Length: 95
Image (cartoon, rainbow, N blue to C red; front, side, top):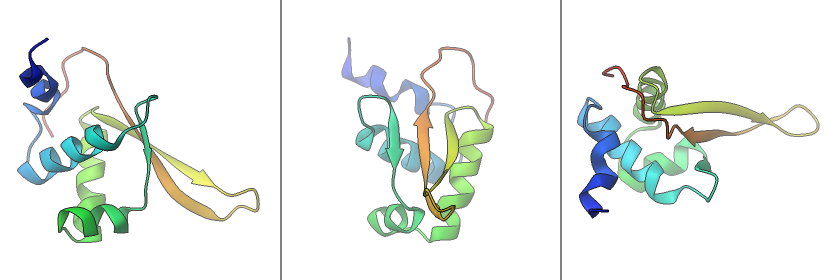
């Protein structure tokens, strides 16, 4: 497989900040295509504000590129969200 094929899921993602975020998530996923990391840490890593990261994560979710699953501790406290990459081949709508 051509290495450039790895970037095909990003082809229709707009704006470019959402594309950057999707590429970053694809790069740090585990073997189950999931990432658990606070939005603040993502923001620091790629030089965006935390609100811009949240906005672009929601765009990616609406486009069908990821699912966002809130996580809670055993005592009900909020933990960082879990982001799961969608690997299905169906056509995704534009963000």
